[in-house]
Length: 162
Picture 1 (cartoon, one colour):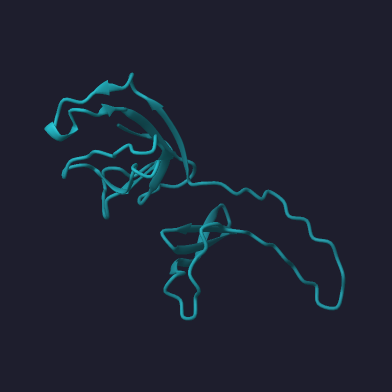
Picture 2 (cartoon, rainbow, N blue to C red):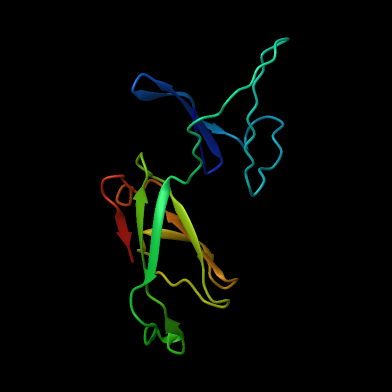
């Protein structure tokens, strides 16, 4: 079985021959009738039943992971900003991160990382990403823009971004 939960939608696949057959595709968890608000964390439970008989069940090859591998580093030493004028008293921290898909293409992704409290994510209107947290609270979170076809992360071709 393969379970993916992304942006509040669940997709379930089962192994079929050498491939994976989707049996549930992008089920909206938050929109389901009677669904309580989704928690910030996920707990996974496994169970099995034999009816009136008893038996032991082994779980093999269980792997829980993220669809992306992320590496990030400071590209260069922080530097004094001179543009635009309202940022002239600020210091820039240029980060470079690389995203690599583990098995399948990842079209809509979001990542977050910690920064010094009071930092500010600066991007212009033409930026390739949307900022969800701007850094003022000590965290930056960005994601691809809706329907972005240029920043799909593929297993064979990591997506470097600066």
